[in-house]
Amino acid sequence: QSVLTQPPSVSGAPGQRVTISCTGSTSNIGALYDVHWYQQLPGKAPKLLIYGNDKRPSGVPGRFSGSRSGTSASLAITGLQAEDEGNYYCQSYDSSLTGPDRVFGGGTKLTVL
Amino acid sequence: QLRLQESGPGLVKPSETLSLTCAVSGGSISSDSHYWAWIRQPPGKGLDWIASIFYGGSTYFHPSLKSRVTISVDTSTNQFSLKLHSAAAADTAIYYCARQLRGSSGYFDFWGQGSLVTVSS
Image (cartoon, rainbow over all chains, first blue to last red; front, side):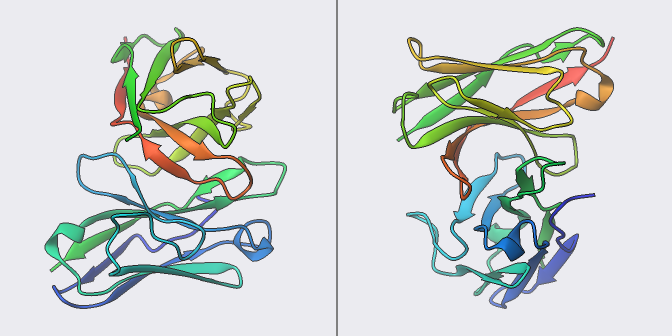
């Protein structure tokens, strides 16, 4: 059971927009700790996609955007492309002393139809 | 461009120690702005942070693994290492090393390619 909850899967046709949610609690996202997103393409290592809730590292297309509100965060992908198919993970900091302080969501598999 | 590369045995027997090293190139491990982390991914599952170390030696661990994990850094060779003692089948995973921004907002901005470690007799 992950500290951050993501839907197991989402799908969309090429060119469409999809969103992936990441739900936390008052000890992580709700405490205003930053949310980061990673993209893991099949057989590859994770890659930083969004950091600090809504910032894109150099080289990440503008089709990817992030937001945070309350105890949740979202990743939006517009103009969906076949090469976007893979797994997406959110990550944040958790201030609960009983668990790890770097926490990931369980991951969302994006399928491009 | 920073590059991280994991190395170590791909097969470990149950109850033995899993050992991995991460070689950092294209930048210094002696960065005041970063920690260096180990993250693992069991086959077909999600990501789990294991531990992080600062070049000065400060460390912190996943509470459930703390009793079995040793992490160290060697600034002379620009490498850091992980040892997971008393390995069990549940430790079978792809192990990634990564650079982590220092601070509570710390994200993992550079990752190694990953090293699959199987714990089996």
